[in-house]
Image 1 (cartoon, helix red, strand yellow):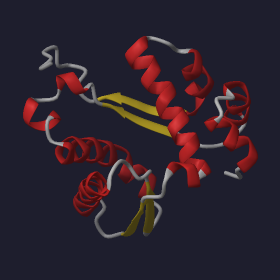
Image 2: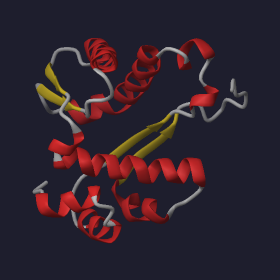
Image 3: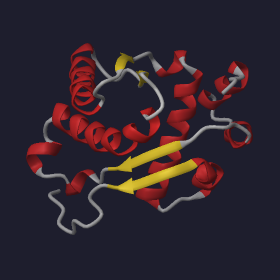
Length: 164
């Protein structure tokens, strides 16, 4: 995907219309795994490393084989988060999942700040639009990206009980 960095900058400035127009013309796919955190068992939701690991494991176990089937290498890029300690926990969780799921392939991880990577800014926008749909029943931004969504899987859909 070719990226117009000036236009992507407008995402951070709240220019939703320009962002929407740009994203709707790009060729990319979205695979989303939804984790309704109140449905997570307390021992999972209370530990950041475990909730990240569960999220990455189920997401990558589901889409990874398809995305990597014709490739021998993978570069997994995800935004850096929080403090150095939180980032270390997140990085370890991602790498442990990849060791389990991505076998017989070479892979590397990369964790840049979102502001430095236009593609991560687009991913942030898409995640935000999906989150608004699920949490607030607000589909305005979701409708813009809907045709890009290949999978949208609610991991704990069948669970009725919430823990908080």
